[in-house]
Amino acid sequence: MVKFKKIFAVSIAVFALILCGLFQSVSISYAASEQVISGGDGTYTVPVNLDLKMGADNFTNPVTVEKFGGKYYMTFGFSSSIGYLNLNLDGKEVGKTSEKKDGWTYYTYTLSENNLKSKLSFSAYINAMSREMSFTATLNLSSSKNFRNRSRFRRTACGICSRYFNESGG
Image (cartoon, rainbow, N blue to C red; front, side):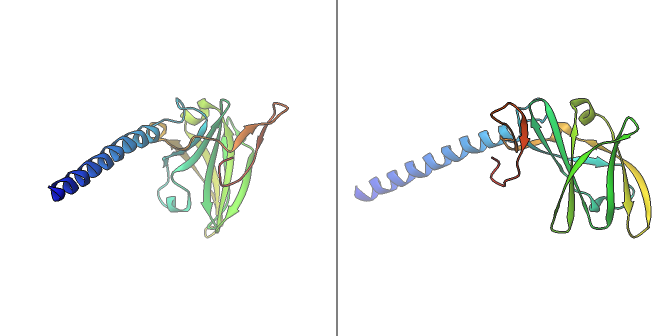
């Protein structure tokens, strides 16, 4: 009888763990399927389709898009094989911030929702070829995944948005 009670208790515990695991994976899947446009403020990974015949491995894919207060901040990285990367919208170069890490350069551009939905025109200088090339990138927004519910952006006491870069996500 004692043996039966132990087996019964162990089987109940295993069953409870399985149920907890199922509920946890369901909630994780739901959060991961959230899209950057319809989702709330946060940080998303977004696959990008590059119109390149070769050299796509010199660019980050997916890109990171942070949504905060109706604005979008797309971070696109490139390897040391690329001299520079410019995003051009409506015939003008888009301003950017930059960060270097582990031999890669990451540019962050501020974009509107309409820009995110359209083809993005880039020009890049290829060091090995000593020339500039142009290409387009299209964000696959329907496949975006929220990996941090908080953005690296926050509203300060005076109501001005400020950016801070700490790995904990604020």
